[in-house]
Image (tube, rainbow, N blue to C red; front, side, top):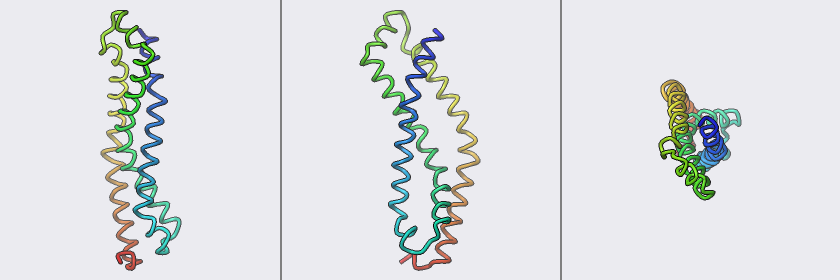
Length: 145
């Protein structure tokens, strides 16, 4: 059983990492698209632009992790189903919960690991991001136009 759990978890990791990469990439592109004029055209220094992007990564990671878990789970189980590995596991007497048990435990551990990020990191980065945007708009009032 231990080998099967390890196999199911290793099938989950590459699609999960791919999902995180793609989702964060899309969110960064969205951030750059919305703020490109402010970052390039209005004379905001590169260091401040980089700080804006880094502070925005807090909420991006919070949004990306659950979506990446969903993408990873769907892709890995679709691959397992297309190779008839789920059928083989079911005919050997395993229930669907027994197959998904390591993924449920891993997702619960990931949820517990994300609690400090949700409680401490994201509020602090959002506060610092809002303060930075206010100070940028105070120094460069032409950004509002």
